[in-house]
Length: 245
Image (cartoon, rainbow, N blue to C red; front, side):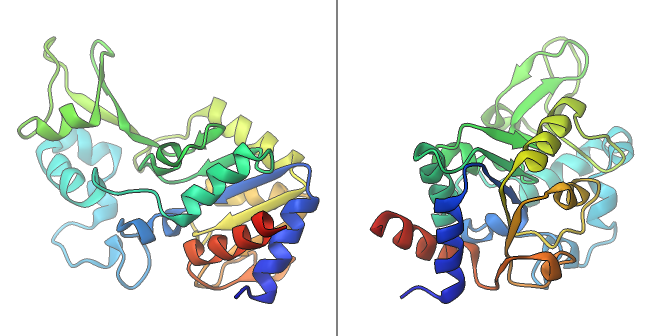
């Protein structure tokens, strides 16, 4: 059974000629990857050093051993599979109804689901490089390396993810901003819109806005459709309407 809000979102998607999705950590929680700021999130864990400090650039350079211990055990989930939200977005793209997926996540689950027009604002755990010679390494190579992964040249390997104190990739940022500005419908999902500068991009949308998030966001009052249920469940209902029609 579809709720009125998910049916309304399905109708907006069918009517739109340019739909863009902007998502955060909540998109992947149904795949078993914890988010950051909820009551069960990563940042709520009690630890001697706050997670925000551990995943900063300066801490990575100063203490790569502790960084990688945290990173490998708390931020990388190689066994995670795409959930109904990832699969729905990929299906919508294949149908010509989703022009871009902009994500703050680093898990690669959108690509695993089949999305191709992807903009990863914060990078990906699946890309890693030597800081000295720029040789590439897979996630598997990083995980199997004891301690801090190193290149044959002697350089330290760094995940291609944006740490605190690091700037976003300017080319990807520009493409994301253009996609949002051109969108007729912007679907914001699984994000509390508290991570800047990425969260500020959504205000550039001049079209309709739909929000799917279990908790309130700063954009709720601007939303044409507001859905407060798990995002996978919401997209399953949306796709029932779209593919049923």
